[in-house]
Length: 166
Ligand SMILES: [Zn+2]
Image 1: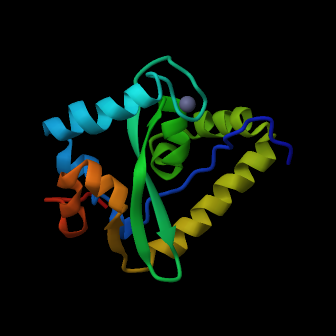
Image 2: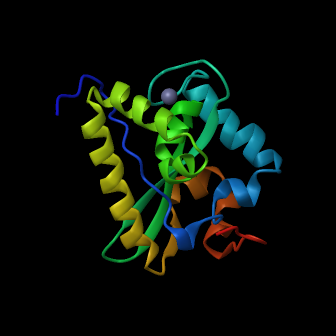
């Protein structure tokens, strides 16, 4: 598969047991999220999508998580800005369920310079990874550099959302 873009766009679905256990869910209504985390991230990306550089539409402050499959440790690594199309691709499972599968496929094709078959294969692989990861119990960690910058994130490993819709 030939990629012209510097940043290929690959869906990385949040494992089921980790749904809702996010910095946004914990801090979304607080100033530290709105003005600091989201504000800093928007400023860093100059109000454009970090992936496709689009400046159109609503921008989402995306949480970048790393998954250590061997140790079952999920680590919050940082934040980046996503446009609505890139956000749909990254959260492809939910997007397909909500009827946005065609946008996921067409944006995957555009961003990865691939055809529909390749896009479907990328999606299938992401779903396979998600199914495996959803069977495990995960420990949550936050990158030290993030806790240094936003001390409120230190509470994230112990945060359990009030109600999670499965
Ligand atoms: Zn984008």
